Amino acid sequence: MTELGLPSVPPRKVREIGTGVVFEGSGHHFSAAPDVDIAAASAAAKVPLSVIVQVTKRCDFDCSFCSEVLQLPDPTLEELDTVRRNLTGVGRVFLSGGEPLMRKDFHEIVEMYHRDFVLAVPTNATHGLSHAPRIAGKVAFANIGLEGPRATVRRVRGDYDKQMAGVRALMEHGISLSLSAVVYRSTLSVLPFTVQIGDVLNAGKVKLILPLRKGNALNLAEHEFITQDEAESTFQHLRGLRAEHQWSPALRLTTWTPQNEGHMIVIEPNGMARAWPVYDAKDLWEPLGNVLEEPITAIWRRYRFKENHYAKYLGRSIHAVAQGV
Ligand code: SF4
Image (cartoon, rainbow, N blue to C red; front, side, top):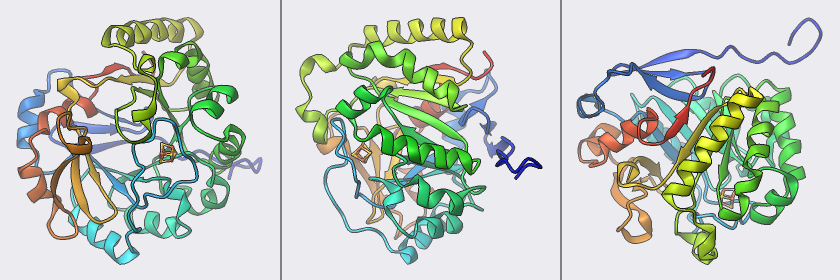
């Protein structure tokens, strides 16, 4: 707390990850010197930069683009501890879902993981009020899924006001925020509002993602999927607005190209690690092995998307503008 009794925001740090890569605490992303050879750095790495650990598949929303519609039992704390040990050396862990804050023991998971990894929490924030005090100071940032103003969020995601109550609670406890928005053709016109909201929330970054054809997104109308050219022109337009309005968040837009295939490593509640998205694989998942049974170093050795992983997380295969640019 400050002398005025206001919550203090933890300092945003740079953290060395290895192979020439650092985690930029202010923009919530990785960076490396421009001359770093991505192919060589990823080939030399022994572990991923970042993994996504699903602590539950449950969620209180049913977003129109959600890919996570099949359920599995939650992992126990003991299983999560085994996963933690087997992830030794990984730079950043997303404690994800489903909606991770649905777990009443979420603070115990944060307690278990926060000394070993840069921790990030992708969340819809609806349970932010009850969790914020217990995870404050231990997570690098919460990544809030929010598609802009109230009417749009209600149409494509869920209860905007419940989300914003949780967002305010996270902020009041000094938890740094980023925003993620899934982009439809029908939401293109609200994207400037989304970035403005990110600026008001002092978000480290605003991340825009195109929907993937899985789960609920299989029911989306075809016209909601924009083309690569539209994504490019949308990003350039937002980049111009960002400069004009002096918005501060870093801006990122990920599209689904061969260079981004399989770049994420997602660990399901049963420990199964999968490359995501693999375009011609069943449900876009490629199984890699089980982190309850073997260390991530063994899984990384046979992971065929190392270069895509590095290129994406270093902002080389996506549209990206860093903070302060
Ligand atoms: S996208 Fe996230 S918030 Fe929405 S239903 Fe799926 S898990 Fe829940």
